[in-house]
Length: 345
Ligand SMILES: Cc1cc2nc3c(=O)[nH]c(=O)nc-3n(C[C@H](O)[C@H](O)[C@H](O)COP(=O)(O)OP(=O)(O)OC[C@H]3O[C@@H](n4cnc5c(N)ncnc54)[C@H](O)[C@@H]3O)c2cc1C
Image (cartoon, rainbow, N blue to C red; front, side, top):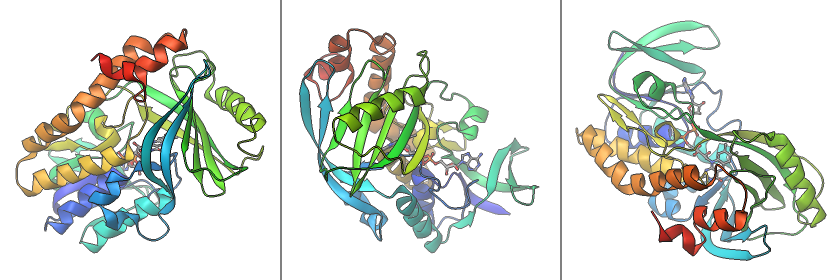
């Protein structure tokens, strides 16, 4: 079968690329190993409000759980710093499914339970996981949107090797919250703890640099102890998840006829871990560049829009976050809510 574009990964990056491409008349095959897009959810589920302005159609149905106003930071030295951070707490499963459905409505062919295996003789090899059947497809372009451990990136060049590791519980909130809470603590090395509200519940998680000799679950349990004793959440675990966050910045986004979007191309913020909006934006950019017949424009645009911010954060991570002591010095230089962050490149 011959396609214009094979998109690997039906997360927000890949599904947005498929949606934009199909809407523009391209013949698109979208594949994902999952049974359903966005399931299981591996996310704290916050997106900035600007994303809704660009793609309001992604926010329909039950995708939005609540609005949030500010991001409030709790430092180990007792300072509390608030920063405007208007946006939405999502149901990622619904949000991801919305985008995939829109792509399919526009004509994308979707194959779930289908794994991308590699390239051979100009063809892409795929496998139907349930039937253990391998087959090949031909496509003029391949979009790698297969997440943090992207196989497409690995097989075509530069790929992310350093990640943050995360663990998260869903817990009942004691009182409703309209802000995102961020905690910097010595027992959450190279990262932070978060409480993100979802109506009567909250996503309570930690992300750490795995090079530190501390287990991520140990760090999460310590964090949970603290926020339960503060009376923010009930001591009850209703769900568990986790995952990996690329922590190096942007990788070559265009490699011949292969283009990378979202986490596969390192478009997740290496310190905050925010990557949903960037995945959607880069997916859309890939789609538009391919429709215009100029993939090299994608490289230029993606680097112009995201390269500076993400690569700067990646440099700061290496410079400051590898020694998790003197947090009063490290945190203001590595977190966007502090003036010090913006003072040096
Ligand atoms: C615990 C946690 C909390 C987070 N919280 C936030 C947050 O609050 N806000 C935010 O903006 N970001 C957050 N992120 C980051 C965000 O989840 C990612 O940046 C975002 O999902 C990237 O989208 P994507 O489409 O690039 O990749 P993904 O969403 O990872 O999608 C990739 C898809 O590719 C598929 N796939 C992988 N390999 C193959 C293969 N070989 N063949 C076929 N399919 C394949 C996967 O099944 C998956 O569906 C968080 C991440 C974690 C781990």
